[in-house]
Length: 318
Image 1: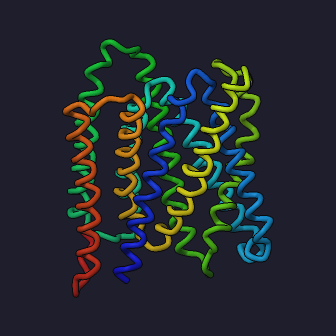
Image 2: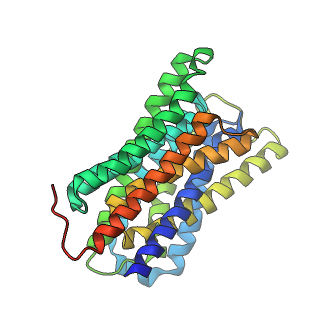
């Protein structure tokens, strides 16, 4: 049981690192239209998924039409909805703003999941959640200090879009965990991941007209721009979509969604780290200590949950 729990934690951390990498996308392809990035990434993810499903037809039939459609809707809401909103937030408000505000997802996921699962008493759960929240506030205090020199309208819109992305991703995490745990039979991880990818693929096709009409540079401007753009789409599709989803589903089968909520906080930390590396600068005092608090809060929650699991008597839910 301990090995299963440790494997779940490791898989979740790998997934969050891969998702944190995707925060670089909008900044890396700028000034190319971010809608093209969303379309390109998920078309590649979808084509990969179609190929996988075609090679696993017996497992797909075993999954059933109902579960296939459930997985598809997760791909639409959790991937297209989340990443589209996040890309717009990063483009308008900045990559650090977007990656930091998505750290609110652990709070939403943990509170809602614990209400459903009753995995922990509220008091020991709220302590690490509060630490994570304080860490995010600390990072934002430093970031808001430059808002005076920034576009207030852009910051406001970017914040609203990032919060909407939080809701979309929280829904994905909670619903995905429920579906995988309540399945009457063991769901094949590869087929489930591919089914999610197919849903994202279908929704991405509908975004093509939006990408063509939106402001920004076209990736088809010349061969050099297109090659660079395509390379980033492929990297985000393989690492940030397929591999991250595969690892996350491994974790979702082994861990309570209540504990997976705080782990998602690492996605924001990885996102900030990748953005700092991209910008070739060191973190400020607030960014550094804010990130430390988030990491500490995540591991404190994991420790608290693990200790509660091994107690001789169940902790009363209060």
